[in-house]
Image (tube, rainbow, N blue to C red; front, side, top):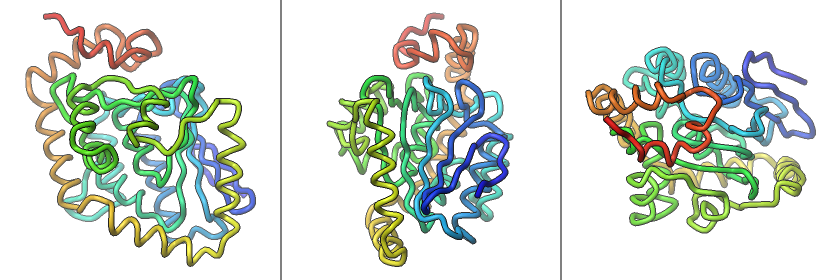
Length: 278
């Protein structure tokens, strides 16, 4: 059984749906990928059928998802808005809805997951990452903005106050081992073991009675996920900050040096945001 998406490759086996992001080498969260993620979440909420667990990974070995497509913010926001009601027109509110789908979701991360890409991973129920090449980061503060799609809420809850400030205000990259130690992700695993570990766990959960799994997730979500109002507030703050002249200046500086293209800037974005020169 497969599902028709233009930027997500899917395969269903033994109750586990593999959803492989395939939106170019950077897997930017732009119009097509957000549209497909909205469709996927709608299906999981309304008619998941035999799907018990979803494993989200990437077709790119270097990027789980680099970040949002900064050239398409109004366009991808319009796509995200289709997942919610009035007042919910933001990527953050969509990812908040994704976090509440009635199946288990697992992010299997190889390569870089920064900005909105990291927030997509954080919206999943669990994150497992390649020790050799996974990188996590919320770089927004380095440009004058803040994580606006749930990153602030998730990291404050997972890392605690002081480490969340380090991660968000510091805007640096975290390798998988440090991310595990901080509580950002579930586990850092040798790359050679990542696929088999996630497959075993996903099939194990998919084999349990679904109502008990759903109840466990729903109860834990109610205890730990942010309130809708907090997500809305972060989204509004993000939208206002990216319109500021200083933020635009820093984003333009990074764009001139190769932001959103395969190269040194995207590979080492945590370093690049601290090297701004007028």
